[in-house]
Structures are given as structure tokens and as C-alpha cells.
Length: 184
Ligand code: PA5
Ligand code: NI
Image 1: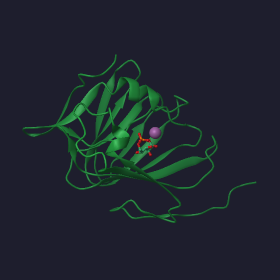
Image 2: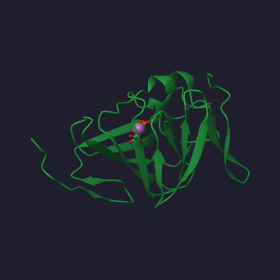
Image 3: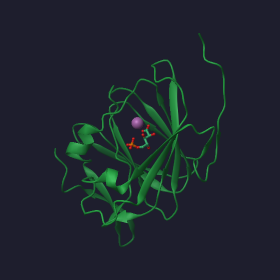
């Protein structure tokens, strides 16, 4: 049977949803091994994901807000784990609601594209591109993601290989540099 139409409200500043039934919290401890430098305080909050509850099937659109804290580990700005979709060709859209950052996208062959994230920008992530958000600002980076419901997550490939680039604070702001630990 068809689902019932519904609406959620989104707080653009905090990413909170109403209703907000599925909230996932990631601490720096969950990002152990992802940064070049060692993590000082594994208890620090990194990001929160608020999911809109819809069956994860290919005929639905899943969506969520992500609230990514500002901060750095060593010179690297806080980021999300990043993933390929388990079904590789599934696409996604990110609409930034507040804050500023960079969206790092990479193909499995290592080709990388980095796009600006700021309020009002809708980033299109085609299938086959791993994606990671990086908060290069001083306030939370909040964005709304919409994706095909059966996409699924492949975290293992990024956990093992890393992204081809890192985003670090340089003399004149954020710099995208080759990741010395990338496994090509
Ligand atoms: O669907 C997405 O790509 C996002 O909602 C991410 O899942 C979210 O930003 C958290 O990042 P990750 O799933 O890489 O930990
Ligand atoms: Ni995704």
C-alpha cells in the first residue's frame, strides 16, 4: 500500500527534526584511525545524524540532516567517516543549511573532486563517488542529504584506504593536500 504523505520540520541552525526518532551520535573515538594525527580526546562529539524514518527501499527517498562540529585533529578539520554506497551507482544530494565546509568526493580509482559547502548550495553526488563532508568553519556545518533508499553504506573501503586527499588548516585557510596515508 502507498505510504501516507507526511512532513518533517528542520531547524536549519541545529539540524534537529520534528519528529526526530532516529539520532546517531559519532564521537572522535568512532573516527579512530581516520585522521593523520592521533586523537587527543576520544570523548569529543564529532557529528550527529538525524534520520527521517522511511523504509530503505529502492522506491523511497531516504533523508537526514548531519550536524558536524567545528574542530581539528592535528591540522585536519573534523570530517564525517565518508562512504561509498553499497550499491555503487546510487546518487545523493546534499543541501547545506548552515556553516561552511568542503565536500570531498572520490572514485575508486582515486580521482577526487572537492566542492564548497555553504548555505543554499545543493551538491549533487553522482553514483560511484565516495563522499565525506569536512567542516572548515568555526560553527556547526549542517546539511540535509537525500538519497535513493536502497543505496546502503560501504564504510569498509574508506576505513581501509582513506580518501586520496586531506583538508588541513593552512596559513591562508583550508588547503586540500594529498593524503600521505592513502592506499591507492
Ligand atoms: O547519506 C549520507 O551520505 C549522509 O547522511 C551521511 O551518512 C552522514 O553525513 C554521515 O556521514 P557518514 O555516513 O559517512 O558517517
Ligand atoms: Ni551517502
